Image 1 (cartoon, rainbow, N blue to C red):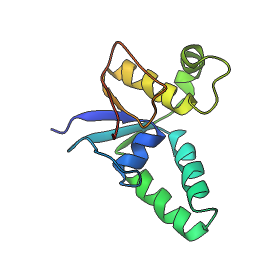
Image 2 (cartoon, rainbow, N blue to C red):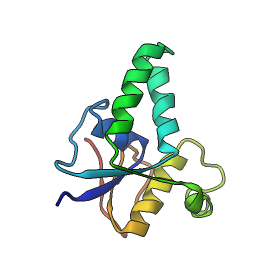
Image 3 (cartoon, one colour):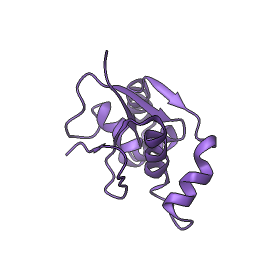
Length: 124
């Protein structure tokens, strides 16, 4: 049975092969639904709005995730952990909160999050 890991947007991009780095072999990837929007923003910026390339890479990224979770149940806890001034790191903090709730490893490209409770893996 493959191990499960929670990904933030950076983890999703790495799992799909769209960011360089090592990926947990044989892992089942889980992510919050709003990570899809962060992935989309990253891909659109990378391809400067080239719709065809954006659609292909978003499709690759979204298909790398085996299970999507709604973020709405983690909003208050995410804001509490990240701080009210956090903007760019909210995706990573909410993924961390989910990983802690599920007692799973977090796969992230962010250096901003840490946890004494779970393992955090990064592509590099």
